[in-house]
Length: 450
Image 1 (cartoon, rainbow, N blue to C red):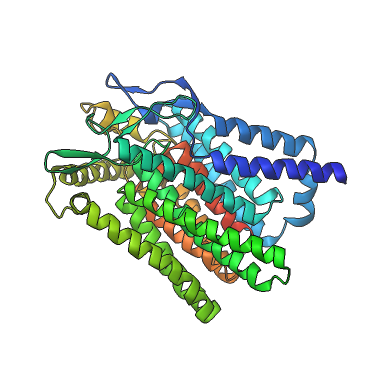
Image 2 (cartoon, helix red, strand yellow):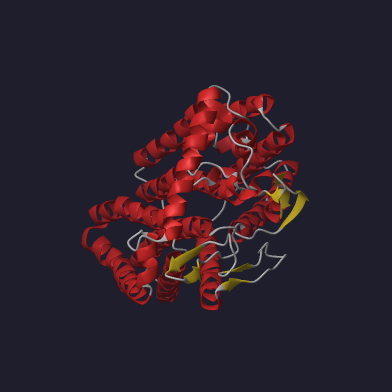
């Protein structure tokens, strides 16, 4: 029994490490994607450091037969339903391989999905301390926000192969920037491939930050030990500090979708917390709203030109280009969906299908997925795949509601918001892992607000 306990502790700490390291893009690029003579990220096959850690943890889990924990505790009706939905989604993705334009990309996409499900399995099956897991998320967000601050100050991203970071400079074409007149300002990337991805991650991390604060305050109220109370007070101050820095990091991404996702999460979270804890809940949430208001106001005052440009208030060129590109991508998706409604064009094959079946004259950069996960899912794996995908999300929302897990509901709606405005939660490795991390957190029974 002691050996089993030691193994579980090892897996738990491996899970915390994995969650903390998720935003790092350290990888071996097995095969570079190429389309129309240019580098194409969505056709690149890579082995990430996170992949290796997940495979090692799964191997250790099953070799030591911790499957006993699954058999004794987890075969209940609700979790069986979740796994049936995941199994249906997996089957549809497997079938889509046989309709793929590029078989190699489809097999790679299927393998990536299986790894992501393996991560979901670890989150839901490895016994771990929920608070430590959420600390791993918010500390990871803190590190990313420190990178964001450095990048914004220097107006460049320094290349680092060990962190998976490519060099970026505000003056380079193709780099994500805001424009104010003739000036170009770099949007923060962190260690991720795009500011929207950093923004989405920080939006989730900030919501978890608030929930963790509420949990710590709840424990402080229950504590009767002076030393323990002192420890909780220090943790509460630390969590507030991390929230402040991470909120600055979110602002520096200039990601409108991420800003909206964080706002949606707050809208779902705030009323339920106040209703549950009354004046205590209102008092604690007020701290975060004060930070958001003060930091947001100072940021808007100092960077008003850039904020205006992101909302098209100055009629900026880049925003017109962005809107036009998204419309083109939506039209591409409509074409592919009409012609491949039932089985799609194959997992991971969206860009290749646009090249083969819609327009082969574009530069490599413009073969991007449609900026909507739900449209991307139906285009790649068909209407049945979309059915299983949306049914899984709705079922987890229902479970969270039944369990009064309003913190989980807030995070789920934040993620859903991101999916309506971007594709990376489905199309890229980090996005897939983040999505299934949130799904795993949603399935776990305990809610942080209690």
